[in-house]
Length: 339
Ligand SMILES: Nc1ncnc2c1ncn2[C@@H]1O[C@H](COP(=O)(O)OP(=O)(O)OP(=O)(O)O)[C@@H](O)[C@H]1O
Ligand SMILES: [Mg+2]
Image (cartoon, rainbow, N blue to C red):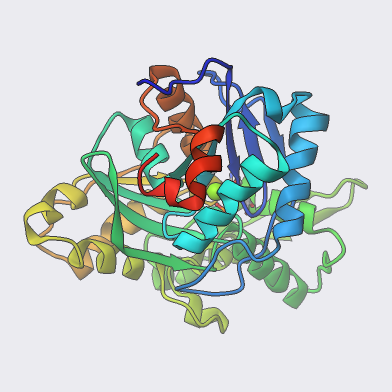
């Protein structure tokens, strides 16, 4: 490509919980930093980034303190939410060029990046992050604008519900969210069938968790109750759709001639998708909602950083459309239409 960067490319996926950043590398992002970049307040539509100052600060610290690079010396490939509205993408471009003075920039939806990491060009990406779950279809390497479905029930929600469930049992970890998150990561799982799981005896489900002080707690039904929020949020008083509903809406809302291919290529992505049993349950739910679909849900290793990894390989292969600073200076944000 004529405007291929002459500088080393930096790939950055600023999630709502963690910023993933680094130079392209098969082993993953060299910096994974816990900076709360933003907090999506809205469910289905509108901007994802609501706290721009926090996002800028998180990026500044990632560049300066973690990667120790000058963004003004690097082309930056920045990931954004699959349904980030035009205004949000314009603002992101402004942040890169005006605030960080990058020489070149590229904006790509996390869905396209994540799917690229799988080697497929058509499929659905179900990204369960910290504060956002998004389901988006990609067709022949391009994001399909519509439909994309999102929900604010994601990894952070599972941790919150786990905290509540433990509190109900007299274990108050409200001041130790990181511990609750660890309990989810170690012992959480999605039930194949929620009611059947509930009927099992406590002894079969029981796990012992050791707190940093050496004290131990028993984790029983909360193990699968908390992750159930991803599928049945209303059970926990959350006004949202379950992830299986989001997925069915996206595929059924796509052109009839590609639906079969979409169902056959469902890819889990994001840290929240690491929870055990998720792919199996999602397959079951698809079978229920679309009985004739030949669905396949992939839970690939490395899916936690799949968007970053896809960005890394796109940048390495040189198949990203870069926007140069001079083009941005000439055309302003209209450059998003034709770089
Ligand atoms: N093994 C695990 N089991 C369950 N949840 C996990 C596991 N590992 C990480 N998580 C959850 O994944 C979430 C972080 O994932 P990720 O880094 O993809 O989010 P993000 O990109 O920052 O957020 P978003 O994509 O929503 O903007 C956290 O909520 C964390 O609790
Ligand atoms: Mg993310």
